[in-house]
Amino acid sequence: MVKGEGSVIGRIWTWLRRPSARLAWSTIFLAGAVGGIVFWGGFNTFMEYSNTMEFCISCHEMRTGPYAEYKKSIHYQNASGVRVICSDCHVPKPWGAKLWRKIRASNELVHKALGTIGTPEKFEAKRRELAERVWASMMASNSRECRNCHSYAAMDFHKQSRRARDKMKEGLEEGKTCIECHKGIAHKLPAAFDDEDED
Image 1 (spheres, rainbow, N blue to C red):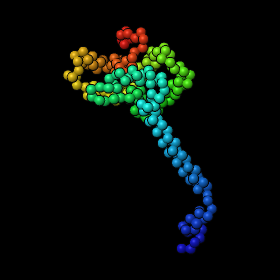
Image 2: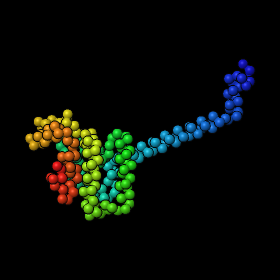
Image 3: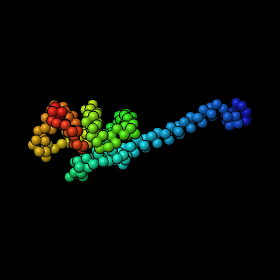
Image 4: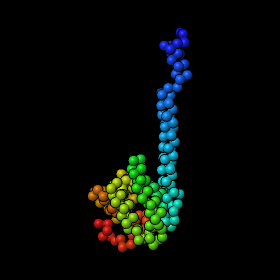
């Protein structure tokens, strides 16, 4: 085969000697793909880091308030040695729902900067509003985060106290979601919260 314009070698040689628009577009595509992978990896890594206990209690408002309460709860220390962390209860596992929760959390950063709950007194003044927002979210998701660990199918009702067994079975029959009965399980309830609020 002669090295000419019509031969395969000739076309490759022409392509190598005169970079074409295809090469430029290929370079742009490759750079975009590499940049996208780096961006996605960094974004996903930070999103996962923001689910760690270290991140959650990095501000004093959380460390001295909700975290201190959580450390006294059954979710922190229990007979089975299973510990859940903030993100287990407050961040959905499905990626889309998790991303939406992170977007909504940016509002919390604004309030951190404004000092809205910067003192124990300010936090207590907003506790009911904050709690109701979390409860509403949990109701809307049918207590999805609770159900990551707890399920009626896995419960041994015979190992529960009679009262707990009756209440759990009643909740199951009525189609209740976890948060309807288990408010204040990891954090103290807002001031003036009484049994009427749970009905």
